[in-house]
Length: 463
Image 1: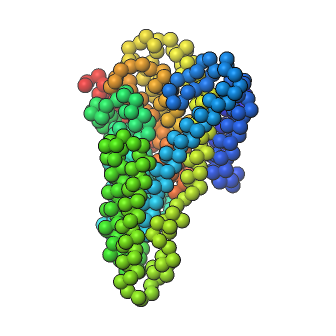
Image 2: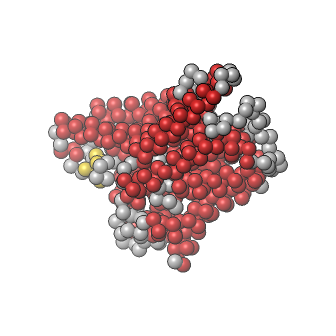
Image 3: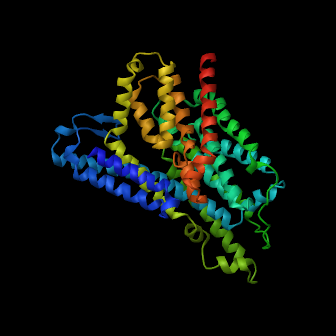
């Protein structure tokens, strides 16, 4: 039965990658493979000899000895656990996207758009790469990608050029998220699990992460798509909204507040995002009423927005297929994780590399395993792979191995567009083709990944 479930995942994965060839939206195979995988688990629950307890992050070797009713109960609890964790991401994503749309409702991004008084493609590339690197460390790579691609869409007119910028934003956002404990979900897992501390994470990973962003950006700046000047979006004829700058800074400030709220309260990030959304929505409603009450003159802006509150209008603009795609892909990966398949892979590594458990950390064998983990995070998903590493290794807090895992899992996902949350959301927002990304961007991500990995290994010997 495990083989059948793996085949369902493989075929579903292929259908997602071949979206443009088979003319079926990637959302559909993601939801289908999720539902079929869990249905097969339920129907064949008595055939499985092991089960991964997600709450305790370990394998239950005695699962095969349990009675059928207890197995079914455990499966339902696991499904509910994964649904809860996935819902945290989806609600967080909904909040971030709604705030971005509210900013756009008040034409807030025109403030940034108007400040871009140059049309050099190279300068624009470096501006977005640096912004992505810094913002992702503060507000996390997923939210940074949403914000920056929203701004990019307001600046760059030609989509064929815009997707090149989006590809480099993905690389820079994932690189920036690796050196911050709140910048990437896997780094947060290691931080919450007392494997890394904030100070040492910065000391060991800032330079490797910076190189992971700078090297591919530098190479890309010499490629044809980033040479010459760019045709910027034409200026809007409609009068400037007097609240645009206020809503831009309020919205971005509310998003930046989310990690602060998490550190203070120790609550999941989606709670802070809902608070931020509520505060932004209050000001949006107040400013919206003020805007329409000031004058009785009817304008195009008035007629398009008058029948909607800013929040309702913004919610209607959210890319819901991307949200459901997240649900499908994350729950499908959760099915593989629940069966302990990833931990089986970890056990195979330990058997084929017997030195792994006795060799000192920092040796070539350990480095190879962690690098493979980075490559694997691009193909499958970095969250279950980091969960597997928590079971593979037992090194203490701030061991250099954990820092290397944080780097590899955080940046390795850039090598495929569906290898990271930032890539998936960019894929949805710009309708980027899987094979276009594989051909044009993946090699840049690989070069950056290796440059940062080499820098980490060199720094490890010095510090």
